[in-house]
Amino acid sequence: MKKSPPKAEGFGAPMGVDPHHVCVHIPRGRSEPVRIIEKFGIRAGTDGLPEQIVRVELDRAKWTAIADQVKRVFNERLKEKGLDASRWVIGENKLDRLLGKELCILAWAIEKASEDLIPVALKNWAGLKPEERWWLFTMTAAATGEQDDAEIGWRKSLRYALTENPVKDAYGLLPRQRRPRQQELIPKPLPLFDR
Image (cartoon, rainbow, N blue to C red):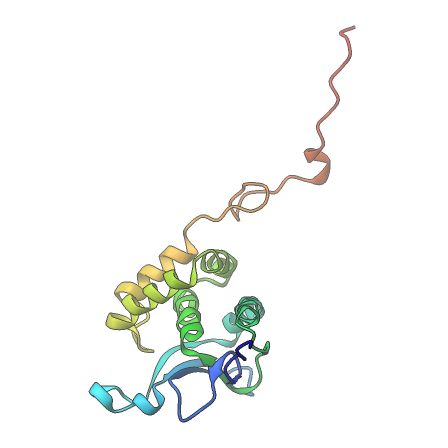
């Protein structure tokens, strides 16, 4: 008998008695920041864990720049596990804690970066394996994982690693290099003979 997938809500957050998960709070007002919050659920209070930690705040323009790509990547992963796809809504969006960790890595990388570097960060982030993202989260969160730690240590390093690491496009060019025009891609015919 085929095992049915566990019940989940949002982007794979387990349903049940107060699970450990991540919440993305998208405010109604477009000028307010999007907050990514780790909620420890039933584990809160054990071994000194707080109820929740605000991991990062992103201004709305930066959130808008990553939201669709992140949704696509996460929905592909949910589909692999037999879970329903989700979408971002105004208000509270629950995520599986591992997906939340992965989102934090991207958000930390772009929080203080120039908006024109966000596509590079997205490509580099998408190129990482989930396990690599989880490791980066663990290392970063241990020292600089709270909202006010943006320009310190691992957080700063993530920004440089994901936004300044060169990513080549289909033409083998870096993002700021000129792409060839279509007619330049077609080789010119060689003369049959010299006159």
